[in-house]
Length: 178
Image (tube, rainbow, N blue to C red; front, side, top):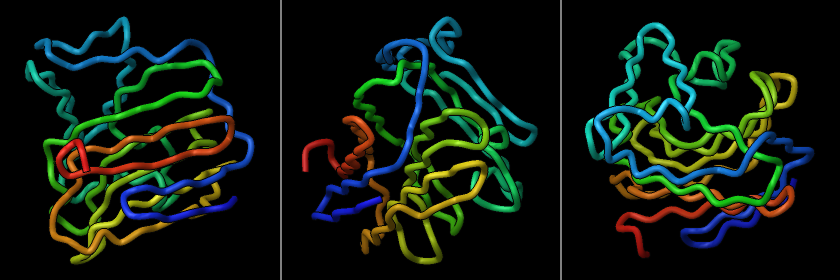
């Protein structure tokens, strides 16, 4: 694929992305329970999911790998809530209340076709560096589409992924505006 990096904005083109079923629905997670009619949950051993009334809190136990790209892990190993959608253009945005403060920590989006074919866009900590990365996975094999060091010691609070055809734009912000 092709990649363009500009300030707080990244564009990447990925081959053959298929996402199926219905249009995405916005959720502010302002209830004390996860709307199970809207969200599917996957909470593997060593992880937990809770609704707090202002956020959905997914926690992965320290020392356990929940990374789609390491040790043969697939999407099935990742704690997440998911929503099925049509193979359409879309915008996804989230606000993180958590930091990626330990090397290996990451948070972001998975765009899944199945457990072995998906795209991961994540904010992560690699040693002392915070990065935004995107990987595409085809038949379980990962291809790094882009990696950008943010070079400051703060986790972006907002992450947006927009899809038009097979082109993806990734935006991040520390305050929701810039």
